[in-house]
Length: 495
Picture 1: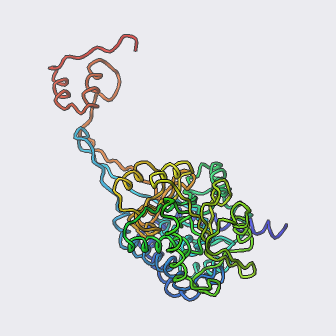
Picture 2: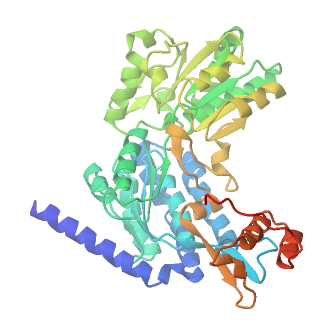
Picture 3: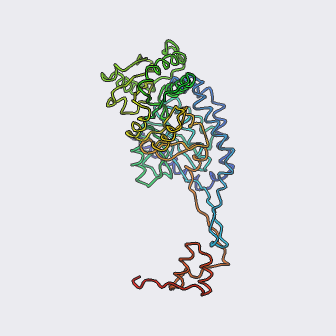
């Protein structure tokens, strides 16, 4: 108990020191922001092998997968922020109407202050450092709480970040749910959370205590709609992209991974046969021996996935895969055909290497199917049919929609990434990250030379007429009223 009290007191002291550091103006300087971003670049390049080892120990990721999804994408994001930083910091001139004589205005981004980033375990490096890029570029002091479910990556970040970044303004706090809960109840200028909707609700409730603004990056059941493509080449490309998006990103433990497939019944058998061929090409005859299949993060999640698969209503729908090994936390990439829609596997986010296929009478029914469920983080549609594309865009709602591919939207720094409804709120990546961690302050400058005398009491009908003309931008009316050449309408006597 005494140790816990001391730890809490130390945490509070560190947070107060960070607030003082921010108030000193140190983090607002462009030079400081650039130095922190360059420090992140050095961390990613110099600690690459350590990151590979940590990701393999926590999740069984191959270095190629680790570089594609975490190291490489972060290097790209840091370079993008460095290239745009001066432009982002300069703000934008605001256009004012001509009536605002001798007045200028601009929108100037300013840092929020001391912000908290809570990251997830499925991409423990990427989901920790991607929001950190935006927070540092925007000039904030940052506390990062990495997930305790990826302990090697959490430890790596805690040890490496003080070496590369300003330890007075950037700190990593490790710990379990108890530490996370205590952090949430502190006063922050922003909380950025990546994780489950269940914990997201707790984050919102805690943030309400201090009216803290929140960005929530959650998840949901992201569908892939596969139309009856006429070309065998197109079908193969579509299947490869769907299976890659499902199984090659942390073994399906990805918030924007494909959760289930929608397809016309008449095409389903051919689709499954093609999937089997592609799966064997990707993962071999014995996926358990493959180094291309990541592992489930821990026993709890393994048992959760096993229970989804061994549900008596679901087990008979397995058409490919299904093997698992609890000791190594391995679950074979698995395909299911038409599991019951009321089963947990079709009600909850799967977050693992299980891919249900749901058959429809016609592909247009996919819109109603998607709309009958919570809004997903992403929708993936494989089609050449233009009317179907238009309908998908206009009649569904999701964080993003991608045609003929999957997950590529995450890599584009020029696109906002985020959810809607139960899949999240707020967005980041590129300048959207900078904006997420900035306050857009209106800055207005006015000359003393020209004043509109009718703005001030005492009130009369003449001034009322001038207000009417002014708010309609009726410049001729203003001139005529001032010169007494326009009839003044009398105000209602009841006012």
